[in-house]
Length: 363
Picture 1: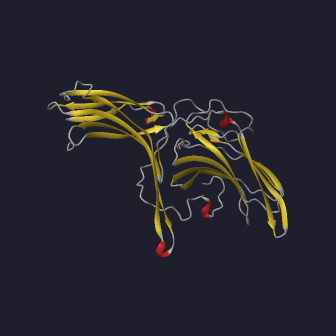
Picture 2: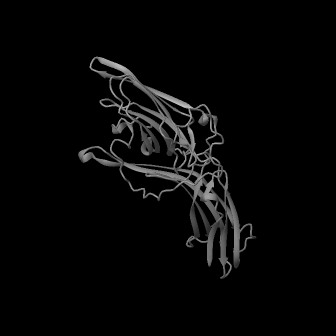
Picture 3: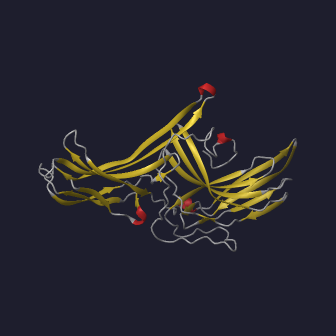
């Protein structure tokens, strides 16, 4: 075979979305003589794998435990040329182009590359030859698959309020409570099209100042294997308020937190999950900080119409309006090495075992 390659029809933004098809052409040039080939096959495989390691035991009993998991989501093929359907003859001399189309399921997880795992898709064209000592000719490439995550569902368009109360104690004396309520107009937001608005009401009935209220937007990646998990939490953005004096109340509306070019919420994968949370933390000296965690869904289909019933934007801050168009592309970090790198002892950052006192989100 003088030339054997595969040309894909590139989709918008370079992303093949679930429910669609991967189409292209296999080009095969045979300028020598008829060949004894069984078939020319195009195959697509989509899978996920995770791997991390942890140190266990002490002293001479200290050892490394590896956690691995693997899932396959799609493994299908089509023969673009087959000896049986070609009359049982040999692959002829000539320049041939074989179009193909492979359907992607509607419930596949999106491509993702993380610190300790990945979800990947690859497509391969293969010349299947006769004889156990003849190596098949192959050409393959990776493709980026995205899931359509809409944010127009009634559940995600509904305002959500959560509250927490903290009573400060000093020996036998208890001061008045600190009541905090956080409200968002909705819990679904679109990549690059939206900004997260939150209103925080603080009633400080204690004798102690609240040093600041911090609103943070977190990305949480959960790797799961052998009934164990490793949690990686990254702060995407954060904004802080002024102090709240003792025996006072405020309503704080921080500047909207713009949603950057980040991966959408990851669904349909049992061993790797990507979720987002908005956390409201009250910083109080001498005690554990109270935390409110609000789950946030990040999608890639803009909101059609903004919901009502939320206070107007503060002056000087505006959220970017929704815009029509295809879901935006999101960045893919470089492939990991998947070396057995050990996470911090006692679990991942933000897990209950690390003693940080970090509230929701937690793993």
